[in-house]
Length: 255
Image 1 (tube, rainbow, N blue to C red):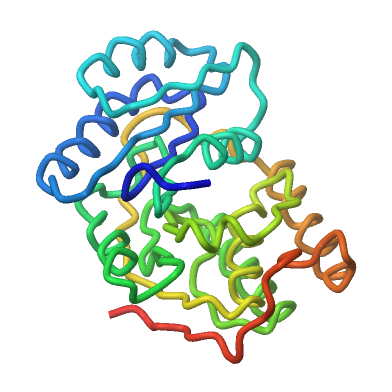
Image 2: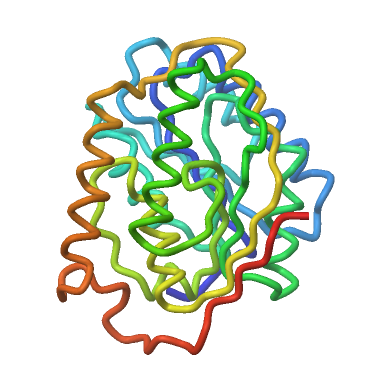
């Protein structure tokens, strides 16, 4: 796909009526302060039941560079993200959550390394997760350790905001149907020797609403991770159909 803008920001939304207005306002405030970014915002409203759609339809009038995709029924986070990726027209793409836990003022730390050609994928790393309960924090640590052990990597955060080059996303085939989609992107980028850069990111915690992630969803992501590891060398799970592997990956640590 030929790019028509510099960067596409992709935001799946489900039951975030209390957060989405602030999220869009903060995001577009940063975009206005960086006019050299030719950008678009793709919002996927995934069949919310709490009035989120009504809020978005009102707010989006303020932001002409926004594109809205509406789902009459909830399809899930991963199908929504994939649809946003398919619609995106940017040379670079970035995933941002709609829950206001990500600080939009950090966008330059993700975007500028891509624009400068310093990285192919930029990963946010939450060094402090003060909003996490102890049990969720423990599960997160175990999950990161397990993925690094299985796939022989040294990644510090797999499921936070990420930004990617179009070249990377055009050369990987995504099979995940769960929250494992973000780790899958990282693993395949690593396997194809794309340049990975980690940047520190502030985890602000929720101010309103409730996360839709539960143990069943987390368990499915873990099951997909184990299945992916077991079938990693099969044709269906190959990182790319047409791109040869480079020599060695470049992992740029956070600063």
